[in-house]
Length: 416
Ligand SMILES: *Cc1c(COP(=O)(O)O)cnc(C)c1O
Ligand SMILES: [Zn+2]
Image 1 (cartoon, rainbow, N blue to C red):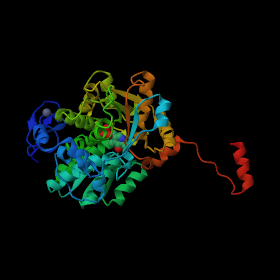
Image 2 (image 1 turned 180 degrees about the vertical axis):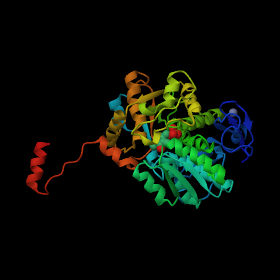
Image 3 (image 1 turned 135 degrees about the vertical axis):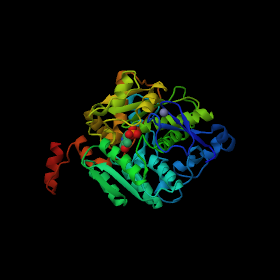
Image 4 (image 1 turned 90 degrees about the vertical axis):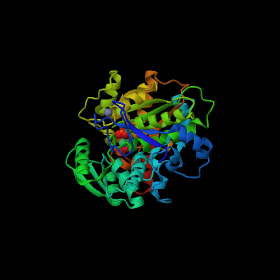
């Protein structure tokens, strides 16, 4: 990797050469940022080279990634990312927004944003010839690691809480990973995965621990740049992006992606990043709103299982993603999350609770005046609604059941 220079600790600023460390800063446990050689990249690559690429996945951004192509062309790992951006005109009009987009990450191969991180971590695992990759997950990260690993024949082990939604557990099993459910929460699974990785020499993908997850997640920023910002040079105000936040790794990864583009001189202005958390799992939002970078753990409780986290593992960078971009944090109630699922459906979008959280955050930001009609807005739906059908059924009224006769139908239609 001629353009992967080093890692830099986000807390103490120490630089490490790529072979010197694997996960976090040995001094203080800080998250590591991947440092790229922007001069080299600019010398050897161009915007046009990327925008004319025929690659229909995040691998079109290989020149900006610290890994090489994992292979598996034509398999799901080469379908990660490159998700659609919808311009929902009717919904935009209802919200009173001039420019409004939703990027649907539910369209990833395993149906969540996590495919981006897992694809890049699997590429790294192949490079270092890891025998086994392992991760702790609330469900989606595991499904993504299992699916991306299956694409290239990489053995994978997944720890998840036994309370994870059935659909997510089914995915883990069907993709052929070794699945270990823990009788505990995500945070306990997280610590166990790290301990096991050290003891058995497995390569650990844990979110907010492995520096390559943010590098994978940053590719969503590249797509927003390529599919929205480059096509709309007339936008004067910065794009406002709403992002659901659990560990804080998606928002910090997207921030990193935009920072890469700014450093290359390929992006006009930094978008404003708004993190959205469930009220019952809001450790990062609480720190931000207190003007602090110190993350105090909570006892997480929310219907949005994908963002239910006691101690966010990428909290400091997640706070900075908002504070350094004139963005912010918003907390929403579970009831608002369910309402958001029901509101997006009639526009053709089926989101899991965590995915709908970003839209619930936008509604509150509009109410609070944090966003106005002239702000261009993009909402990220991070996961497909089929991931958690139980929650979806709570968001809607049950369907009527009638006798299969015309009189019964007519009676029902008159009544309803
Ligand atoms: C993991 C996840 C998130 C939150 O990402 P973090 O990096 O933990 O902040 C949001 N939505 C969905 C669907 C997820 O799976
Ligand atoms: Zn450090």
